[in-house]
Amino acid sequence: MESSAMARSLLSASRLAPPPPHHRDLVSLSLSANRARNRIAMSHPNPKSPASSKAPRSLVARCAVEATEAAESEVPIEKKFPAFPTVMDINQIREILPHRFPFLLVDRVIECNPGVSAVGIKNVTINDNFFPGHFPERPIMPGVLMVEAMAQVGGLVMLQPEVGGSRDNFFFAGIDKVRFRKPVIAGDILVMRMTLVKLQKRFGIAKMEGKAYVGGELVCEGEFLMATGTE
Image (cartoon, rainbow, N blue to C red; front, side, top):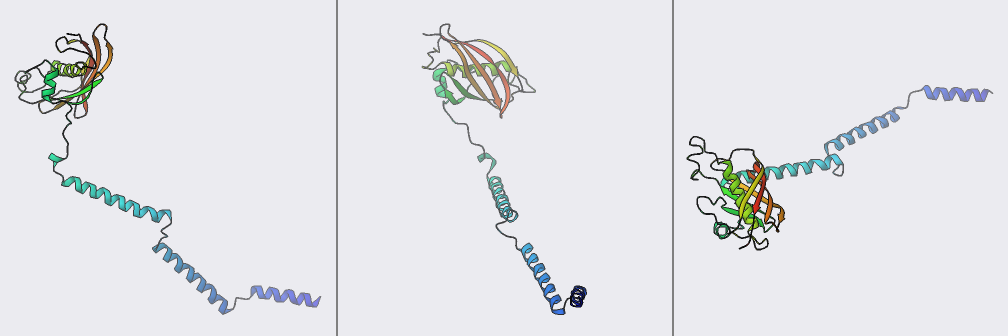
């Protein structure tokens, strides 16, 4: 009994007594080492961690964008925009269409799928003969001439050997659902796409869909009827 009581009193005394000095020194040294490791880890992040891997990539991407912008700014504006391709020049167009000055309103064909679709351009200049009267103080291309120019592009689609049309017997038969979205003025490049929607060879009637653009913006659209025939 006395030995057990003495053991309990020694155990409680050891719990209440402060740790020896050398033990306290070891604990403080361990804490200081942990703090030092944390500071080193914060100043030198792990390259395999997601946060550290994002920084170099974003820096490289930003540098690449800045280099591209700098290169583009060094290119003169007259060299930034390539010319339209040429599928048919004006001489080839004149071989297909019967129109002549001042009513030939297609300067170049930049895409052509015979019997399917074509894209032509009209360079609108202040020297066009309709501007002195339409209008003297505000030169605007007449809407009826925009429709005529689109019909001529349609003629380039239909007057092909694959379709069997004849330049001596080809007429603009009708228009429907024509809308003019924006005025076309001198200096604009009118880009016109005509697409064959339906062809009735028995009756010689072709239905086409046309859209005209300036700078990528729609300025005119409508449905066209063409009458075709054979020589």
